[in-house]
Image (cartoon, rainbow, N blue to C red):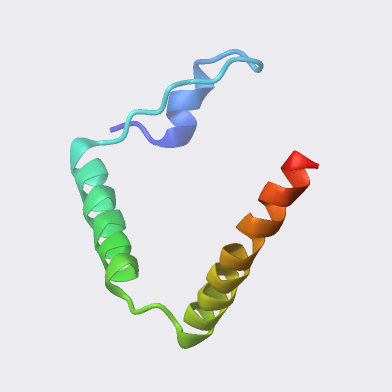
Length: 73
């Protein structure tokens, strides 16, 4: 099996060589990335972010009336 350096050695200095990973390596990377992504998605949102989101939502609810008046005027 060729490593990444061997795969690149056939290309000119300005060209980018395509590096092909072994399918088993690709599967392993894919499983690892999916596991990390699943952990992130299932993690609870920190309370500090929830407070910030609530503040943003409250601000956005106050602004539409002001924005509508600005657009007319």
